Length: 232
Length: 232
DNA sequence: CGCTCGTCAAGAGCGGTGCTCTCGTTTCTT
DNA sequence: AAGAAACGAGAGCACCGCTCTTGACGAGCG
Image 1 (cartoon, chains in turn red, purple, blue, green):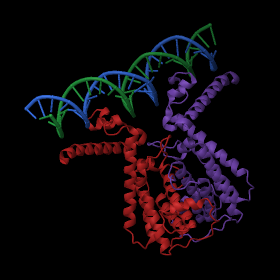
Image 2 (image 1 turned 90 degrees about the vertical axis):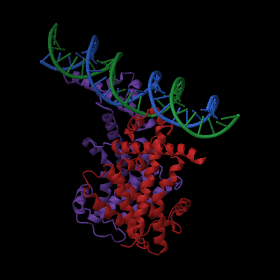
Image 3 (image 1 turned 180 degrees about the horizontal axis):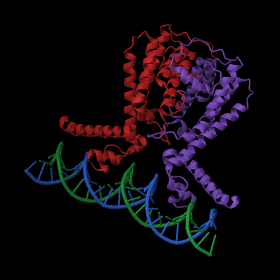
Image 4 (image 1 turned 120 degrees about the horizontal axis):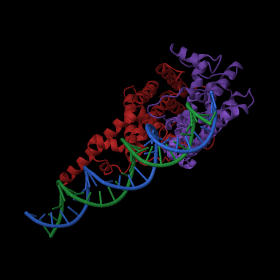
């Protein structure tokens, strides 16, 4: 019977979830470096060695938390985008910006885990990729929609893209169908600018300089929208 | 005699330097999380407890490495800027961009220590600030020089800056004397865009997407220059 | 029913960590 | 020369990730 076998699998899945939940709580409190398998086991009233039945190593637990984090951020971004009329491309962009920032401010340690420095001998497990690009997928759709609607009027001239960028642009274009090379460049600029700003804000680079970060962020993202070519 | 007293201080300073040097080697190899006081002591042939005569905790050693890193990066940026004619503002900006990126690629773990996620319970020791802003000082001078020379012609219109940004702009203006509010916004966009790009590149966010990063980076920074208002 | 057999939790243990304390020794100061 | 300050070494504490062994539990099969 699948039910009996499922019963075992079910309790296993449940305990796995409990472990990640407790681990996430510790992550929120102490950050990634403060996460301790023994402390998680203690919290769950089990032996530390039992954890290894569910996660072969601490890195694997962290990877699970990373995937969860990407999904949580991606979902927040998707919801923010969905709440704005499809044709209000500027509003969708700003909604995405604020969704990312709000999530980052609410979950600083998890944001640091996703977009801060990865562990030294870093190799991104391939199974993190689908979760990791959820927010970027939403963003690409906004740019693509805006371009297709003829809503993009980028100001100023850019130098011609270098020849080797054509292939890279083609890869990026999978997320922004139909968008010309220069708009892809502008799209990359806005996207890296968004995360660059949030990382600066979260990691203390704005200390003693920018105090009303919410206002400065909103205005900066509106300027990014203009450079992308979105209407005011 | 100051010489006799200096003899003690001298050997102390020398050992302090040796400790940071060995620690930096380990940082380069294993990253910040792999740094071990005991391993440093072992490498130096001394007891681990002796290290604490020189650095009260591991965090203090890391802080010293952070300051060294900021200074190394700042010096690289200063040299890169100094090698370009003063009136070639676009060239100075591009030189700074490439200096930051080259340094980051050559010292990824140290870059991660500076601009990646800080330790969880983060409080920036105030004595890191002078070193931390060396690169920004150079950048501010470039923008200020370009503006004073009348070389800035920012394309497109930006929305009016929010009232609360005036005070923040005034603080930033200490590094960019004489620059109007909107140019300060554009300056922040380029600066956060530079570090946002490098962080994305270094922390794996460009994997499977952008392969010729050098070319894409150079072109993107030229586009940033245009948005700032610098001539082609 | 009884008997394997796979799954699991628990405990001990290994080598490592940051950090503290004590205890002689060295080195500078007075 | 005597006292004070700085120093290195060693033992030890509490913690860590991880491994290995042992024993209990429960599902499937003869």
